[in-house]
Structures are given as structure tokens and as C-alpha cells.
Length: 143
Image 1 (cartoon, helix red, strand yellow):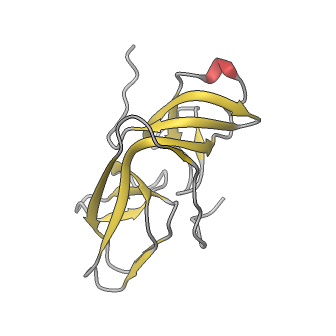
Image 2 (image 1 turned 30 degrees about the horizontal axis):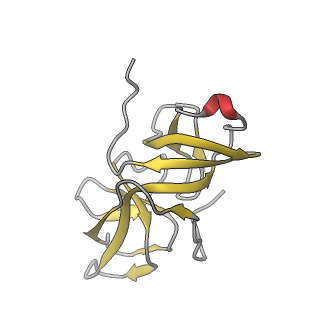
């Protein structure tokens, strides 16, 4: 998969904590609504992927582009979203940590070097579709 080039609207549950934030957008960046967003080492918002090694933030609530870093983006930091998690395909995955995959539009339950944890599976739906609670900060395994 690649970074989103068109907006994607994820279905979300309107329950529990729901928190948003605004972040400066990294210079020469474009983030589409529905993309997962991380903060780079300068604290600026950028498309999330396994190469960012930054702080996980959440899902972009709007599409924004900038050439010189003079704008901000609204990010949904916490909430429950219906996401496709490529290797979470049954009820046994409920409670598993979800990691951001290779780009701003993929998720996995398989931990690997460079992958950032973004939340936990709350409910299995069907196929690889799951309700995932995003937490807007690194998720740690209790073990």
C-alpha cells in the first residue's frame, strides 16, 4: 500500500473518550483526511509510516497541504474506528495491540522493528475489519 492520495472516511463509534488536537504540518507535506498521522522529530505532523520513528498521533480529520510549514492539521487523537487490520481475522485478536504498517493507511497486529503501536482491537467485525480504539500516544504491552 502507499500513502493515501484521496480522502478516506473511517467509520467511528461515538462513544468513550474522543479527543482532537491541532499540529503544525511539516514543510512540503500533504496529508489526506483519514490518513494516520505521526509527529516527526521536530514535532510537526507528517504521514505516519514505519520509517517515521516519531510519536503516533491519530487520524487526520481534514486534508491539508503546505509548501513552507505555515499551516496546521486537525487530528483525531482518541476514539474507536472501524479499520482494516491485515492479520486480525477472528475474535482471538480482541485485545491485541494494533501497529501502524508500512504507510499511513495500513495496520497490523504483528510487531516488528520500526512499527508504532496505535491502539487495541476492541471488537472483531468480519474478515480483517475490526473496531480499534486509538489512544493518541504509544501503546505498551502490559507484559
